Length: 237
Image (cartoon, rainbow, N blue to C red; front, side, top):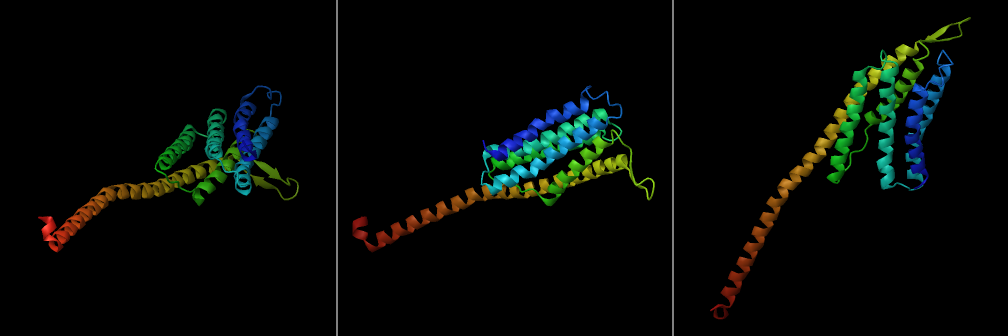
């Protein structure tokens, strides 16, 4: 175990903590949900920051391990899936069931493709769409949590009021994230298919190449034998 792995484990440990903060009755005394919402948002943001921090430290300290490569994507998927499933229950008018199904299903699909790619001996690097998806996921989850308490924020109400529609931002971010998730999954699948197709083609060509080499070797042996017989007919007889 090293520092990057401990940071990744802290992100996994934050998953049940976020669920507990969002669902516990201990904050029911605060009727407006302000404490619950702020605490859950803060924990989720801190956990999201560790997503980039553990990878940076692992590369900087040259501590990239097999365990880290396994735990890092697992922590991301657990955190996002747990957040959306919990929000489906708490604020279904913002986070619908179909959103959670698409997000969790997409993560299962990518995990399956990565497992197949690893068994075939290659990897598919995360695209820019995948990185954008992660950022939008963080924004959409935080916005949805805040929408449990506020419909909008009004800044400078007495002078030049600026209205930030929190609930509308949450809905827009969630559906934008769904679109990016689908597009990035398609992009990932295309990249996977190209590499796996090349592998299959190489496997098909390999026996053909081997058979041609064997045939040439046999022809060379036969030609050498004929040459030897022609040069020394007495010995051949």
